[in-house]
Every structure is written in C-alpha cells, then in structure tokens.
Image 1 (cartoon, helix red, strand yellow):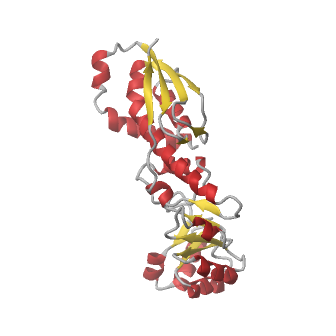
Image 2: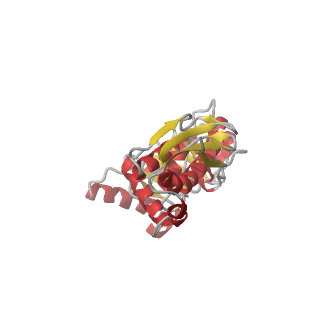
Length: 284
C-alpha cells in the first residue's frame, strides 16, 4: 500500500469530517482520558481495511496501541472481532466514522471481487477492475479489489494509454489513433503501454495488422463469448486480450472458457454493497 497516498487521503477525510472541531467529543469527554475500542463484525464476507484503520489511528495518535485479530483478505463471520485499539478516547471517537466508512466500503468490494475470482478457478483468465470508481477514493477501492483476489488495471489516465471508442472516433479511426499514440510515446520518451479497444472482428484484424511493436493489449468490447473465440484466433497470442462490457457473475465463466487473458468488470466497485461493521467502546 502506498503510505503517502494513504496519509493524503486520511488527512483530507479527517479535515472534511472534523472541520472546526469534534464538538460532541470535546463537550463531554476529558481530553486526556484513555479508552479501548473494538471493531465488531456484523456481516459475513471478506475483510478489508484493517491496515487502513491502523494507519488512521497511528496518524492521529502515534502512541495508539493497535492489535489486529484478523488480517486483510481473511474470511469474516458475524460476531467476530477484527481488531482492538487502546488510545485517547478523543482519538477513537474522532476516527470512528472514517474507519467504518473505509472498512465497510472496502470489505464490500473485496467480498464481491472474491465471488468473481471463485468463478474463475480452473481458468487462466484474470479479473481486472476499471476506473469506474468514487472520486478521491480510487486508491482504497482498488486496494480492496486486490485484497479480494482481483488484479488492478491502470490507476489513472497517466500510467497507461487506452485508446477507447471516443479516442478512436475523434482521432479519425484506428490506424491514426494507434500511430499518433505510439509517436507521442516516442517523442516524449514515455514508457507507456498502449491498449486499444475494438468493437468488431474487423477492428481486431486492423489492430493485428498495424499494431505490432506498438500495441500490447486488445480490448474486446461487448463481444459475445463466440466472437471472442474468433477474435482470439485472429490475435493468435501476439497481443494480450481483454474482454469487457456487461460481464457479471452469471456470465463470467462463459468468457473465461474462451481462454481470454483478462476480463474487466466495472461492477466490482460501482455495484459492491458496503458490509456492516461497528466500532464499539469497551468499558472495563
């Protein structure tokens, strides 16, 4: 996990939540009073965000004692305890909602991702996420996909080139889009891979004809499994292949059975439901 990105996210999120002060806590809890809290699991699934919670507590109060009883990626069952923390009660109460928001969302994504990866057992196909993420929360959503067993696609617009339908149409077609993109990488000394979206078998043939040494992966967008099988024959393992568009838990095996290298599923993130967790005071 990128600790610098995590610290930036935590700092911004706490600023958003605390504003001029956590007045509920300030009004009734002495500032120097110490306490204990524990994270209770209230729904079955795959746990994600334990290390994020540790990072939040440690950023706010470096001397906090954080004890994890379960790790990211573990199966969790209703009634279990994920962690406990000993710290200032002000720290526990101020961090509570941010931790729950992160962990509930991440656990939901990790759980759904795990369901997809279970469907891919026995196949060579790998599961990819997409950029269909919550603004400013992408880092943790993609981390949750990884925890759930998926593979992260590009993080943003800067770390890989993907020529999608609109790029191709605006550029005047597949050939000029590919040639201009490759020329751009050469002129600017950029070590960026280029992926190209195709919408037909004719598009696949065009990319295979002109893309050698320029394109590394061909996306097969909204292809049926039968069309993907035909496309893979054309590609002949000279490029990586990715199936995308409308793939869900009910259909993913039929795509994997074609032998395509990757399937990308935006729903891993934007269709995941948060799981129920609670951070409770421990009174001794």
